[in-house]
Image (cartoon, rainbow, N blue to C red; front, side, top):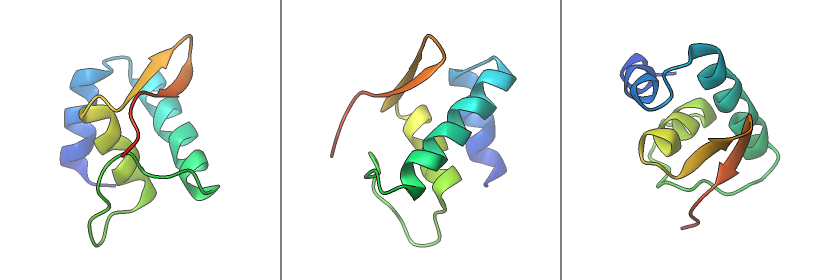
Length: 72
């Protein structure tokens, strides 16, 4: 997980435990076969993808649930 992505995502979701839970849930979704909502660049792991999705506003937290808001 890239620290600069964590810092940027923390500006979007300022509650750190909620950010951790959101990333964890999205990583599980990605490893279970859900498509990434951002371009997967070489070397990106699932946590990097989840953080990038949060930064770009592709997923939102609603009642502690990770909701996809856009599909590529």
